Length: 203
Image 1 (cartoon, one colour):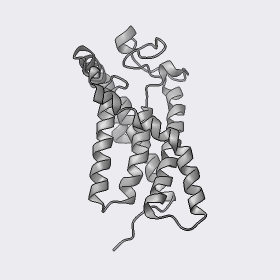
Image 2 (cartoon, helix red, strand yellow):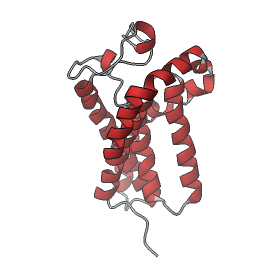
Image 3 (tube, helix red, strand yellow):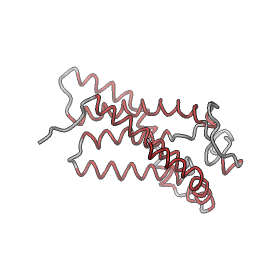
Image 4 (cartoon, helix red, strand yellow):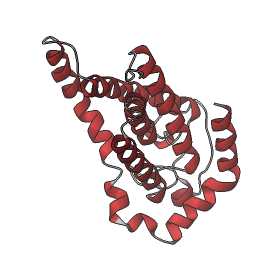
């Protein structure tokens, strides 16, 4: 938490605005793969309820396999993380880097920058990043549950890092938004894994 607070403050004063303007002036958000990489988090959340239902039906037939239990916990972790992020978004009330929906105020579009605590609405929901929270809430559970699987570790880390970078590259979020969302998702995932006793047997 201390690292997150310090990192957010540093980014807020010295990094967020330069990066957002760099992305805008160099048209980095015109690179289609960055846009595609922002699609999975909300899509995974949209399907999570169905996945949880199927897994609960499967549970009536016997104990979960490790991957099934991991998927169950990961989906729950993602849903909780996003709900928590919505609450924090209302608490912090931060404007977005760019104007991308319903003429929302933004740094690039209207020169609006900063936090406006307890100001509710979609136009002030940039901090923390919901995409980042969902990505880490889902991915961290897999990293905890399967620490000895190099393949799972590499795939999860590469995909997660790519999606996090894409949020900044598309000017959907400031760097500090992504850091805060990632920490939020990671913390919730660790608690979820701990409460579910989700770990591989010790040799």
